[in-house]
Image 1 (tube, rainbow, N blue to C red):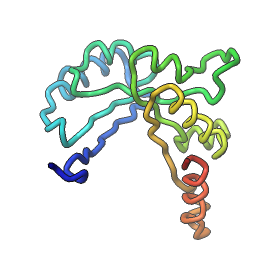
Image 2 (image 1 turned 30 degrees about the vertical axis):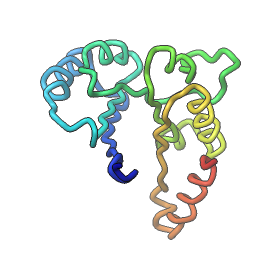
Image 3 (image 1 turned 90 degrees about the horizontal axis):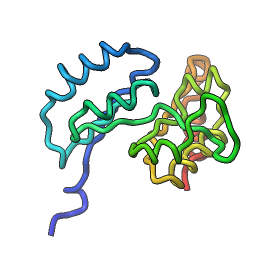
Image 4 (image 1 turned 60 degrees about the horizontal axis):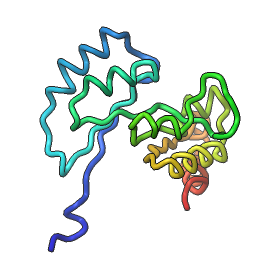
Amino acid sequence: MAAAADKKRYLIGGNWKSNGSVTFVRDMINNVLNKMKFEESKLEVVVAPMIIHVPSAKAMLHSHIQVCAQNVAAEEKKAQTGEIKAEQVHDFGLKWAIVGHSERRQHYLETNDVVAEKVKRCQQNHLTAIVCIGEKLDEREAGQTHDVLKQQLDAVKP
């Protein structure tokens, strides 16, 4: 019987942020991603295109590369223009969502509590959350990195 450690798979994820045109997505998928060769038992590859490119990326990618949502809404019950709910991400057949990205924390003022709520929404909807953590430059320069990362992790741990 193989030990549990033998089943470890590494994750490589690519967040495309708000970059990419239809041409870029098609070229990246056809000329780079679909040509990648790797051992699926040892490596999982996930890409996160902009939400408008998710359907075409999902349709064009070979099955050994998965598509990830760049974000999910913290609240499931109310209507929110422009937000994507974890339930919708799962319904579309995706298995991954990124939460807690530094840009979301900084520009949209997402707190550790909001990130924790997003993780909860992912778990409730059978998604694996890729939780981003990290300190800001001023926090690093003030020697607060450890404390900031601990607070971010404590917020999302069970």
